[in-house]
Length: 285
Image (cartoon, rainbow, N blue to C red; front, top):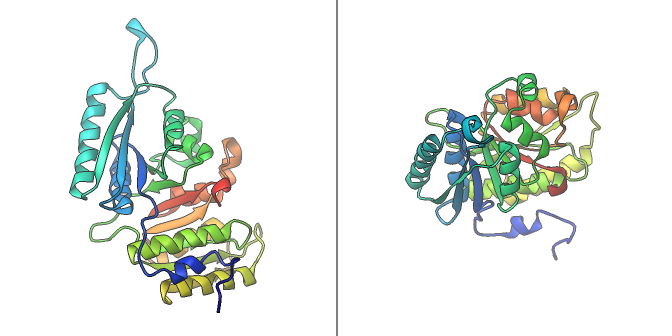
């Protein structure tokens, strides 16, 4: 039977070899524990044939006696050397870059446009606190266009992305999220949990979810679990990730900024989930 051109998973279902989804990754390095986790996880995604660009933004401002930097050049070199060692230990090549420009978030976003994926450490402040002080990670969450990995440190003995949770609303763009989760699962030999939340702020799309479940089963030889949850979307995703011991959440983001971001599902998940979150911007879905 010929493949349907309307089936976005038909190619992956028929594929017989694993593929690397993100081979060229930009890692923003700032010395935090989650930043180091971002480098580790980016190296795992890139694989031995991939490449990491390790970026430290010193954000130098002012001149003369008023000249200051968010990260001193000496510390930036130290942080990048540590990140490069993480990449070497994973067998992945890397390039180190120090950029003195500012603001730091915009430098990171501009440079990310030339890469397959941007990897950053999860914010260390609360959602509201991060927005009020203009944290770099919070700014990136509101403006990113390149796929974004927001990394949490993995627990000892737990492999990254061995159990992937993909959150689907069944609406336009969700097929691309499911396709991405499928490709990642194949490359990592991971299982997938498909979660669909039915709450007061969402519309139920049972047929679309059933179709996505079927496509995942074809692509992954049945290594799929589906959960339909009657709950708010962010609570459903966070709780399902914990209950299923997911090590990576794949979901979309509307990239809300300012006070509107307080209602953002993806922001809630990034701050509350125990594991890393891979986000796709609207244009990439």
